[in-house]
Length: 260
Figure: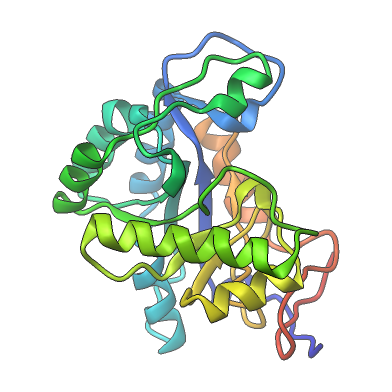
């Protein structure tokens, strides 16, 4: 694996959200929730400091040609919750921004049963009419596999089915090619990356906390999670300082970054 220095000035940030809404204070699974008041303040902070928000596809294209603004941020939302439409999207529309939402192809219109298993309400996931309406309004969609299950350590065939079937189903539902994937729970391994490439994905995101910079595998891009307790300043602190991964990151041969 080649090693390239992570240079914060030559890349962009990807923020990771899940649900946005009105939630009671909590102690567990805080990374799955963002109160709408904090989300509104976080977006106002980005606007005030001149950040450019775009889709992951746009950011990667500009990055590859050297035309990327240093203050570029991609907003990603995992699982495809209905409350994205209710709370997050109206705020993003006020700023004229887009988002990339990752859908669990086998659970469209269902509920997040994995949250119920952890003692939280099983939030509703968006159905196809909602997804298509948001697509027409400028939201970008990617795959979050077929089931909401960890991929790392599973056989090649099982991972192939998860990623291939999800991509095909989403392409049928959206009427466009789908090239973005997000690995459930941030769980992936070398097999996952090989399968993702073979099944047609060109961009993948993980839960590794860092800034996208030279050396990163486009199928294993890092993100910075925004948790329930993060204020606008807390989010800004992550953007400014959480730029280098703490541990070696799984990537395909030919890619690599230094760790802290």
